[in-house]
Image (cartoon, rainbow, N blue to C red; front, top):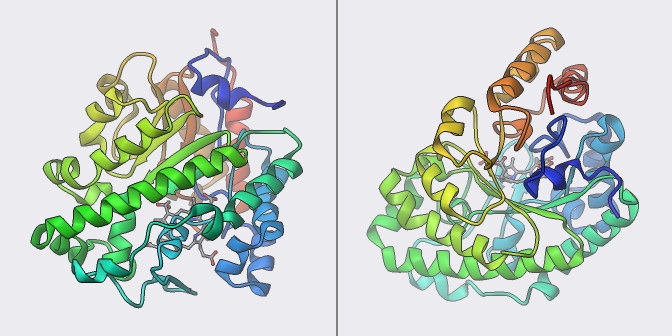
Length: 344
Ligand code: 1CP
């Protein structure tokens, strides 16, 4: 039993007196208690050790009492399990020393037995659920196949991922084979996460917005939709695509329970593009959290007013940035928790 089930009730289409709130990347770099753990253990040790991953997951809940927890992990554990080496280099980010650039490079890429190679994630979920004692629901997540391809082909982070696009345009057959392998692995992985206790799944298409609408429908959306369909009737799925509002019609037609958007789409525009009871999530520009509590409170209230407090989950438009002051984060959560609707 989950004591605070506000988040789940909204995802199930119920009306509530205030919207639930959580924050993308809430488990991590802006928290001093996380930085302490980071000083002792490297990134993948933190992900692979259930005691550490569950502790980091719960740290923000302890401090702020938001309405959902999100498991500390990373989208790149999937390529790792598929026999693609991934390093997390401090101050650089993810590095793939042997990126996939041709059909031949795909020979080494396996579809893993997820219980063997990703069992540590399932163990982390079980331990987190025990430690949460039913306080709030737990979100599990995965990156979209396209967003994973970006890293696997480019070899590191980028703003444009031109090598990833070049690969798709020059070697579409290889690109689709890689996307297919990623999709199959992601489906088994997410089913494992749900079996271990994840109450909700969020899909992150962080780099979907760098594709043209036409290419999005070729290289990203069909694979995401396959994942959403495969999880139907299991748990609610939130489809977050950064810069992807051009695909809102597809998201709206899909079986996703909620659509996450970033700040480049105005709340009223988003509402006009979807069915009236569609659950939307987002979309404060995370840079507002670098301003001051008064401005944050005003912006959050304005945002709730524009989305409407029903069928809505308050969140940022993308992840919180590392140097965010803790009092500003508190103002963000307190504003939502104190929100009084004029009518239910
Ligand atoms: O030392 C550190 O702490 C490294 C920073 C870090 C953290 C805290 C990385 C490396 N990953 C994470 C955790 C993480 N990653 C979570 C934790 C749960 C949470 O609190 O939300 C999640 C959901 C992710 C997902 C993730 N990783 C995404 C999708 C979400 C998004 O923000 O768009 C992406 C694109 C990544 C790749 C990645 N991992 C880490 C970094 C620095 C990056 C981005 C690199 C880049 O800019 O390309």
